[in-house]
Length: 412
Image (tube, rainbow, N blue to C red; front, side, top):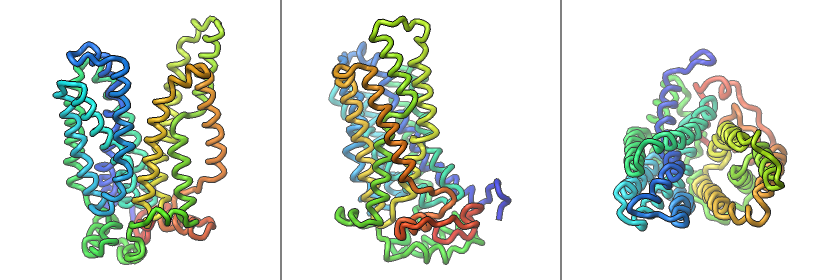
């Protein structure tokens, strides 16, 4: 057992495996940030993209994510988590190739749609995979890396896009997606999925590599509930109480991602002062500062926690189906937010729009405070036990201090 605060060899195995999956956040960020840098160049390119067409180019990623997310659950169950990550890398590479060599708006839109499909699929599969290969001690840090990689991808897209041609930026983004394809190809399959498929020898070997030779692998295999949690569930089963609450909490968290707190209030105040003819020259820095605060708050709050929480609380019986539904709602609300922002500004003014979203954030924060279940230090089995019994389960010492012997950590 490694001293508290230090990582053992097997924990490094878990971190490396999780890092390969969470690296997928990097190409996701590149896809999300691409149009901010590329659109000004596309307007002056041989494609002659108009402002209206530019909005269409930007909306292709959330639309592709919206369409692809519901299919990810079935792919995870049929192919396995690792294989689903390999598969999702392919449309990303193809999409960026189409964008790089686009000779028409149609090809450009198709490329963006494919990269969007990869984005939606990645945000379903990667958090599920990370939750199933890591122990309670490492699950939080590993899950948070996904959002960190996403933000780094967005930042890199902004920086490179200032100096690189839009075709070169697309080519570099495709190269990053190809690198991710290589990383996930070298990763292990999810032990939970292997056990569910009856491939116990492979599940045992994978657990020994992830948990260490001294870990109680047999107890953990038994705790997986082989034959009970197959990952196959009908939509009607989500009405069962033990499934309904985790799904509702997941949907609430992903919906509340779209708009975040005090920075929106400040934005609203600035635009209210500007709309009423006040002199705002002394505080022209305020909108940019509010955006920075917004991104910082999102980066340490809703951003990483959303995907991590989804991977933790959804039961294995319905995880494939429910995670697809959750990400569908996530990208659906993102698409609607983007689509309705300008009409809302025209209808209720910019200040009113920001204040409306600030109120939604406040209401959501209160609801989340009252309803969210604490998962820190708990194994996935203990989290599921809470929803089964509706009683809080205290984390065990083993699960909160070290991964050795963490039987049942993959259940849930």
